[in-house]
Structure formats: C-alpha cells, structure tokens
Length: 450
Image (tube, rainbow, N blue to C red; front, side, top):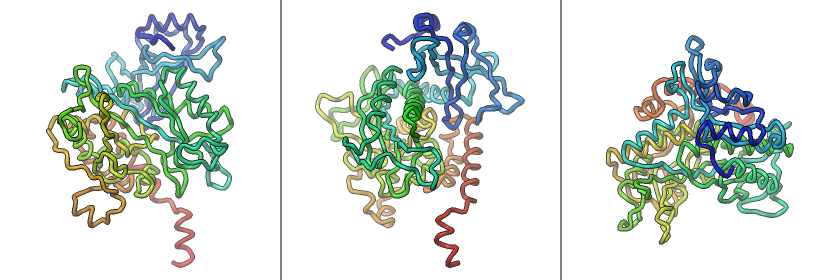
C-alpha cells in the first residue's frame, strides 16, 4: 500500500475504496502465536473507539477466567489488504491490535506492550529508535506430518543455489511479492545451507514495526507454502545432521537522527554506546536466552558445529561468536551495527527484541566495558581453553535456560511480573513434558545392552 494509513479515518476511507468486507484483528499470545478474529467492516468505528471485547482466559499466558475481559484496540498504521484473499469483491484486510483492559489501560501481558515499554526506556535514555533487521530462515517440507517421522525436503540444494535443485524459488518469489504488497520491503532472498532451507531478508525498521512484520512474514510464508501444497516451518532444528534455522538480528540505536553506534575515531568504528550495548547483551545473554531461544527444540540448534553460536564473545569476522560487528565501509556510517546471531525464528519477536534491547540498554546505563574481540574459531577451542579465556556458553537446554531466567531481575523487568510468572510456568511445564519422554535414540542405543 503506497500511502500508509495513520488514523482511523484513513483506514475507514481505504475500506470503502477497496470494498473491504471483513477486517481481521491480529495479536499474539505470550508464546508468539498469532491470534485473530474478524469483524465486519461496518463495526470499525466501534473498534477504533473502544476496542473489541474477547475472552482473555482462553489465550495462552493471558488472565485467568475471573479477570478474563479483554479489549483488542486496532492500530490503524498496521492496516493492509491480505494478498492471499480475494482482491476484487469482499476483500479481507488486517490490523494488529494493542490489548487493553476494561477502562482502556494497557494490558501488562500484551507482548506488543512489553516491546513498547522497552522502547520507552530507550527514549528516556535519549535514543530516537532501536533499528533492527532480522534474517529469518525456514524450511519447506512436503507435509507437516511425514509418514516415516522424517520430514521430506523439496530439494537437496545448498547455500545460494539457483538450479533445478531449488524447487522453492517460484514459491519464494510469490512470497516476496505478497510481502511487498503488505508494505514489507525485502532486500534479498536466497536458498540457505540446508536442503529445502530458505531465507528472505527484510529491510531494517524500528523494533515494534519489525516485530509486527516478523509475525506477518511467518504467516505469509506458511500461507503461500500451503497454496502450493507444501508445509513451511520455522522450527529451529527440524532435520538431524543439518543446519538449523536461525534469526540473526542486525541492530543499532539512533540518536538525533544519526547512528549512535558509529565513531570515526575508534579502531573498530564503534562508539562507547555501541560497546556498552554489546557488552550488555553478552553479559545478560544467558538470562534472556529463553526469549530468543524459546522452545525445547531451540537448544538442538544451539550446539557447536552447525553455524549456531553458543559462546559469549564478539568479533568482526568470526561467525562462531555470539555477536558479530560487520566491517565498516567508508561512507556507510549509518550501517554500523551489531549482529546477534543466537536467536531463532520461532521466538515471540516482541519478547525477543524487547529482551535484546533491555540487555543492551542495561550495558549502556551501567557503563559495561566491552572485552577484546575473539577472532579465532571458537569451535576449535577446548573447554579448558575457553574457561581459561573466561568465555561462557549459552544454556545447553531449555530447562537450564528457564532456571537462569527465573532468577533474573532483568528478565522480570523486561516482561513485567504477570508475564514473567506465566512465561516461566509455561516453559517449565514444556521442559518437564519433554524430559520424561523416552526417545527412539534411547531405545536403539540402550535397550539392547542395558
């Protein structure tokens, strides 16, 4: 949509121009799953004025039944027509919503509100924006439920392949065209390292808009895969022995309209703000790991040897470090950024980006000092060598991660007491459900000999 709507009046005018019959109101639960209900376009005046009511007790992580009344208040700046629905008659549109409680106040368990609160802290510290550019990877499979339990890939292609091996190229092209119709600027797309693995990279935006775009991106990828009869998944590690899917996040702060991470006089071209921000993310990475690696399966990806960083270090060229600072190019001061490489695309983007920002701001506020970069391949170092250099690792399991987060004052402040309590409870249950399972690995390796 060429001219983005800014007000309720803009949206109502667009609804008339495009013959919109239904508007889907989107929001997310605490786990980052997209929720939606439709309203007749004739109800938009009421929706904008007071929000549309729904039962919050049925939404994961929201209020219990005795406090279940919620209001979904649509954000007019997120209005778009859905390109996979009819575009001529009875057109369908969508808007993201902020969740409110009766009386109109923000609901503390709304992931969008948690992101807004983190951005408010940045604003109070003098920063204009937290700009991020995530790279979400995903797989195409022939079915969501393979008969033999092993997902069937569409191709055996590799990194940047563009041959008959890349069966997803047409599907990827349609997906990109749909994203652009939804106002999401795509910089480039390509086949990734794993068979049937792909990546579509969006141009950077402020964090709240980008979190909305990540939710849109995931549903668009899945809708167009379904159109071709395939299944798309953002599961972090769906294939044994192959690279998992990551979500590397490029990030910077702006101040006075300029990139606050750039310093022409520094050997690394990093400002004191950038150095303290990176130091904050390194120091608090273990605590916020359930926010960027949210699922049991996430920790099957975060192991050495498959391009997924686990060591708490930074570098300029070394992709085995947790944070990489891309090399500076003269004239590209605005592109100075830090790339956090550990998140995966199945995380709740609002909680993930809020946790990243809060950790970085903690470093800036408290003046954390950045250690020297680690330019050697950290995968080649022994545990003794890593310990000698003081390099820690991310938690090895969701169980370990959630217990570290449960003791974190930073995570408590990031999520707020309500969401913090519910998130920890849900993730502990997920870990308990997983760890009591008897796997085929155990049957195959232990049953014959024990």
